[in-house]
Length: 174
Ligand code: FES
Image (cartoon, rainbow, N blue to C red; front, top):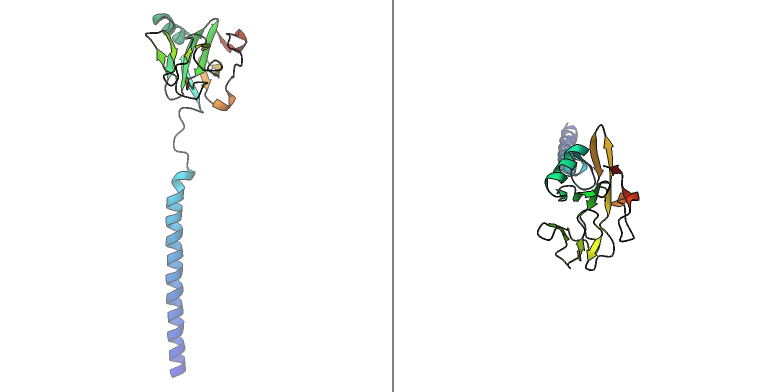
């Protein structure tokens, strides 16, 4: 009788310990899932790297006409729409010198990088002065159902080695 009672006690203690252990493991796993889950889920896709809708060709041309061909900034996509000779292009606003974000300077009527003073033409983004080695890169633009779409993947951008305007880069003619 005594031996049976003691083994019952041992069995109960082992069950209790196993329950505590499994409970701890389950709690740890739940905390791990809670901590990692937000990083596994894509919650928002916007800006650089995505395809950005910028309106119809007519809307964009009307905006150029109303503002003396002033470049149209898309802040999230990090590009300017330019009224290039013969069409519309999207210039990645990353300076080709050392990568600063290039602003349009309305007073000078040109792009003017404040980091080291590179200047770019407002319609073609070719270099007008400063240390930049080549024009601003261009994002691909396509038209679907009457709307222009800009592919802002920097890895697919059009890199122009020569500092001249070349109409072969035009994908949307206007
Ligand atoms: S980063 Fe623009 S001029 Fe140097």
